[in-house]
Length: 271
Image 1 (cartoon, rainbow, N blue to C red):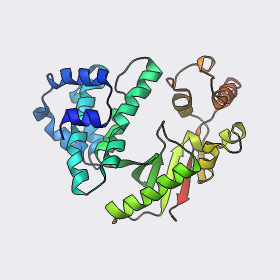
Image 2: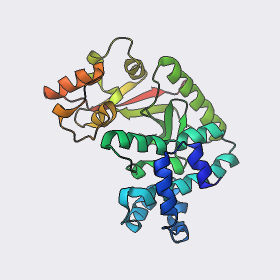
Image 3: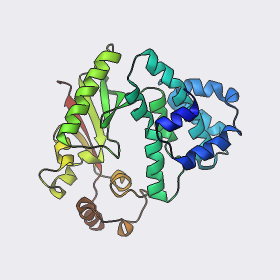
Image 4: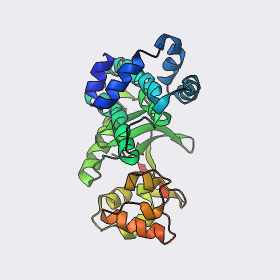
């Protein structure tokens, strides 16, 4: 797969493609080969990202990092094929780049790349998007688990989540049969018990919450600001948009000194 083919496959924004074509002429991948190889290995990806960030210190809008990570995504396509993983899973997993750039535009009014600290997980084949949800190889209390992440464009209806979980169970049993896990976990503002009285009984968020046994709560933190309001997390409470019913209720809660925080939950893999 060529880079331009990848850009088309993940519907990368035209503005970003044009900028990356300029970067292509400024960067020498042969000098970065060591970092790229390690970025594609889940055991070394996190460290390699930090090292590469230092090497690319003069990196306006982190476009050189974006170019390097998309080059890794291009190469990882062959590994997907070797394991016979369906194209749709590769495509939806790598669309994280396009989604994050769009989220950045909505929050900041312009496009740049601010998620390099996260996307090395996708290019090292540690996270996969399967249906509406993303799934990550993780550990909980010393045992192997699958961590669930909820993309900003996910449909959390019961039917959609049921389908995603069933597809994920089949995926891991088919392509990673040696990875024996007994639980799914999730750490998110969406699991915060604070949301329960703010939502209608038939809320998709509440339906999602009910799947999990809550292990712990973190009452502080402003994770929900970024995801619920689509603004930078340091935005003043008074300035938060209040268009949806949940936005209005959460904003009122925050203005009255409350916090949403987040929670960590577990569900048994009994599908």
